[in-house]
Image 1: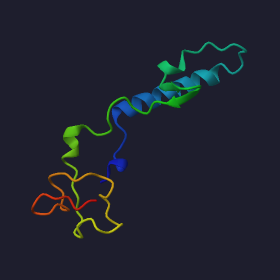
Image 2 (image 1 turned 90 degrees about the vertical axis):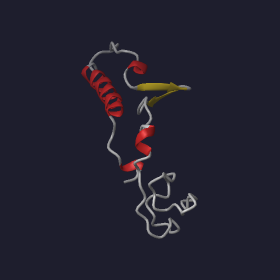
Image 3 (image 1 turned 180 degrees about the horizontal axis):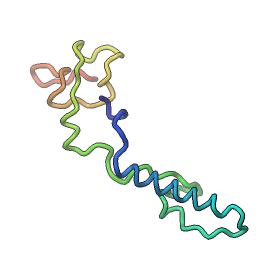
Image 4 (image 1 turned 180 degrees about the vertical axis):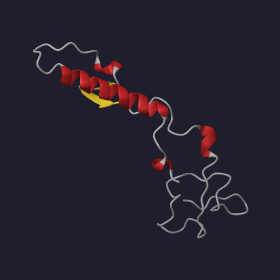
Length: 106
């Protein structure tokens, strides 16, 4: 499985719930001319310049220890474009490594 196909982490879910809650607060106060809302930066958003950008997570998507568990099942040495492990770096358990520990995934 590629890293992109992993399910969201608890950290990502937390920020998604915060943003959803903020949106619900906005909708509940649409009838008010001056709605009372918390700062968006405390509700899963971050400011970049003059724009609000969703904060997707605060932790890395995959802990360092789990990256070593990612394996490559390619039998062609990762030389074809169909190889699913192309975007990922080689790990010790990848089949695309040569016997001299050279990664073929490049």
